[in-house]
Image (tube, rainbow, N blue to C red; front, side):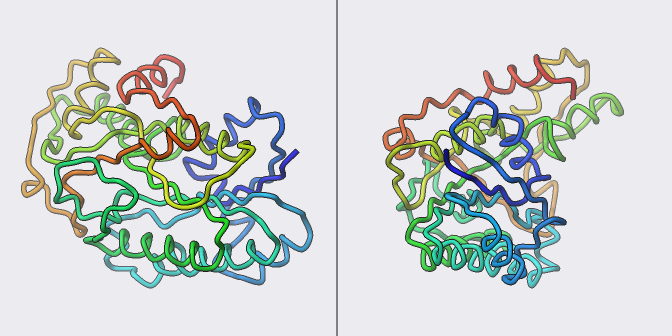
Amino acid sequence: MRKVLVTGASGQLGSAINSNKAKFENLNFIFKSSQELDITKQDAIEELLDQEHFDIIVNTAAYTAVDKAEIEPEKAQLINATAVQYLAKSAYKRGIVLIHISTDYVFDGLHNKARTESDDTNPIGVYGKTKLEGEKLALQENPKTIIIRTAWVYSEFGNNFVKTMLRLFKEKSQISVINDQIGSPTNANDLAKAILKIACSEKQVYGIFNYSNEGQCSWFEFANKIKELVQSKIEILPITTSEYPTLAQRPAFSLLSKEKIKDTYGLEIPNWDESLNELLEKKDL
């Protein structure tokens, strides 16, 4: 039985891990929200790790407000980098494996091919820069670290693109959605199950891995698939990124290669539209 600490437990991914944990009987969990465990305070981390023995820490806590990060860079740095360093350092002292969640935003999105784990990083905003710094600090402080980069995460939990679309479908007769940013939507439940399988793995391989659902689409195509699956009558208009200015620049092409994680951990990854359909069929969002 491995004991697992999940930080950021009230967030989207932390909630998805909690929702899927019953299928993994050889893992024993303690979930801590940011209110229950402030990872920006090393003393708080040390105190908890002294009280409880853990084999694995899964850090899902993050500052994810991409635009707000441009005006709160210190706060983004504290949560996405400094706090990760604290976790990694405290875990290393006790021989604990750290599974840390990162993002496609570590890339600039200028290359129209799926990015591999070894490709050069070049973040174009504060969020991406702080997440990349967190990756580097985690690997530097704890060799037993597994970084999982993901993208376009949605679920029945928290705030995300799917839930926003479903709300707008009820409120509006017409909306506009960006059609020149490409990626692969990721069901947080699929990502959660992948993390849990890695946590159960007899032989854990450390380093950086990519995970998103298979396939690709634009946000416009994503929105239209949601519309189709829920049989909405809303009109969705395609627009360009330049027509919808934001504080932070987004990567234009966010596709991630998943070959490494599939080969290393034997994962089968569903296609994004199949996974979306499964969520919308099962969940009352």
